[in-house]
Image (cartoon, rainbow, N blue to C red; front, side, top):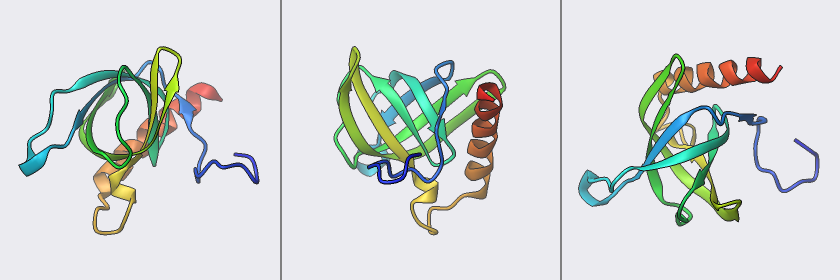
Length: 125
């Protein structure tokens, strides 16, 4: 992270294109919309960026299914913080909900995402 940049991240993100991610928008009364397969661009324990075939509005709440080798996390809650045109679709940046405020904090989600982050951190190093 560079000083003075507009980057709001408190930790660097690591490339993770081999993760399989499905996102589902949270609907009214707990109903979710149909899942959409997206490509993970990068992640850390606080957030993730994906390449989506369609734009997603800022502030939309999502459920994520994250799968990879030795990784299987479902119903990870996140909120869209940015969406910009990128390559063949849209770069959707999201922040995981467990770290937005202490009422949503989940130690099990924090530990799971920390393990995933550590795995990709070691791959980059």
